[in-house]
Amino acid sequence: AERLDALERQAALETTPGVRRALQGEAAALATQRGEVERAIALWEMRLQADPNDRNALDGLVDRLTSAERWADLAVVLRRRAKADLPPAQRRADLMQLVRVQSVHLGEPVQAIATLQELLQSWADDPEATETLLDLFAQVERWPDWLAMGTKVGEREKAHLVGLFVRLADLCRTKLHD
Image (cartoon, rainbow, N blue to C red):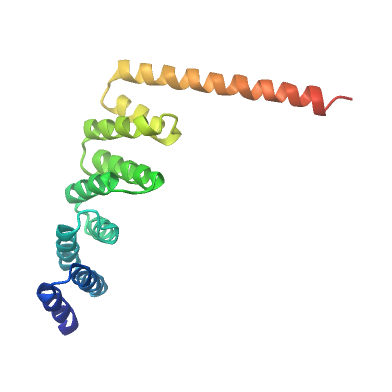
């Protein structure tokens, strides 16, 4: 406990931003090890005040909020991390995690639908997002939207299958002739 208190005091007195963030991160990790989740969350949040795009702080905060089951706060941080300068795969993963939080933990399927529609603007053919969106349309009984999305998926799959069969026929013709 003394080490944690000392790290927090040192971070509060530190004037160099990078050193202050490092001390706050060390203190947050120590608080986590000690099982002081709320204290760790507060430390990560302080670190984010200095740099809203601090990837380590965002990651630490997502982990702590998840373990504390603070779903509303987690949704805010996931949205924030998804807007940060991240690789596309991480952004997609954050948006899908946000969808699960919104639909399962917060009981907000309409918000989850909006998040999925945002995700599909960048990843139009994402099968997981598409299936989840169809499930949510059914859950909230948005049948016209379900029909439109289902038709779009069917057309896309039909085009994929036609292409596959053309390739298969070419293979049979050129490689499997007896």
